[in-house]
Image (cartoon, rainbow over all chains, first blue to last red; front, side, top):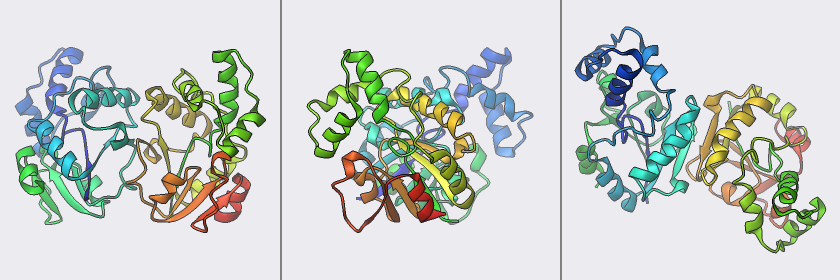
Length: 174
Length: 174
């Protein structure tokens, strides 16, 4: 059985819409989703630390929306592959338990044995990695699937298979 | 730089003396350390679930004693190797943050990037694994160092290098 290493943020959980909600709550100003995406595409967001601070707030990770079609496809992958969810979570200590609870709510078929929170993904090995971060894929020794995010559109290396959504992951892996 | 995958419980943190303390607190009865060790050696502890329940209690992991000489040797290993602390922690959700805080207190030279909490260690790769659990070492593709614990005395395979204490780890790796 081939082993899949699956990322959480921006892959099965959507971060951008949550930025919009928390930005309004914390700074009292509207951040339009399309504007944020445009900034991410061009690397022009004025002060990224304003967004990073939001990641430290209670419930940020607990109430993230599930990425469209992720539930259904991950459920099928879980039957056909040896699946591990590996999420970089050490920088935000609140995130640890919130992510665990989030997975239990939305992906109840994933056992705790299949979950890992790491500071880095350098020591992770498997056959297929699905991640939105090129820096994680670069350390990986297997097949690399780059899940599209506005931040990674500039990467076009043949090293990565790009998937724009979960429908495309299903086409590649199922 | 060779990569070391280092376990926490029973390797850099001592569990048995903490069992003794919490056993007294929770059940009101004395559990003698030597008795516990004897039971672990022989696999004869009457009801292991009584011990496992203690692992769910607040502060259990936060206040564990540091294994003798671990601090000094790990500090030196950290300079000579690419070191990751990988601890199975998913079954005890309180443990996640307690372990993170414990590491910060006793091993402040370990960066969060070097820490991982996992449900399983099957997908972990590196050159050297130090662990007290044969089941973790068995999945590993590199050199296997079995850190002695009364539970693992029965394993004598040449597959593992046995280390009885941190002084012996230093002799092997430094």
